[in-house]
Image 1 (cartoon, rainbow, N blue to C red):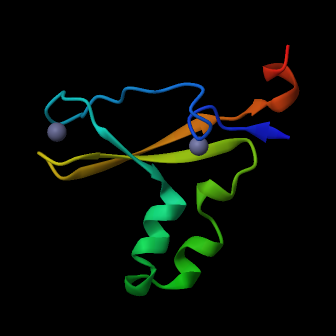
Image 2: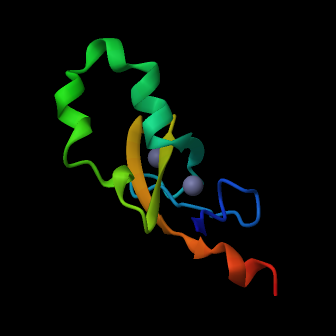
Image 3: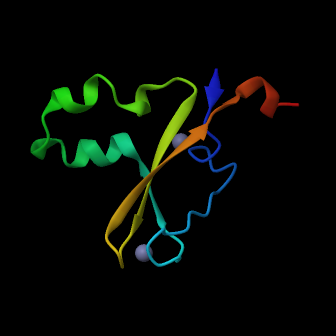
Length: 85
Ligand SMILES: [Zn+2]
Ligand SMILES: [Zn+2]
């Protein structure tokens, strides 16, 4: 079963803000974000086409508090078997 290195604290990614060049904050999974704000969103919006349902990729959510912009990063999952080697 593929696992996400970021979710398992096996790797970290530094994402530069396209606006100011500063390191963006990894605010976690996109799904968590939407869960927090789900009251404001139509459930249908993200239950059918959003990328975080992809089995091969984990979508992480980066935020720049200065520019107040968000960037989604698709992290390729790694086969768990390969981690054991
Ligand atoms: Zn992840
Ligand atoms: Zn910025």
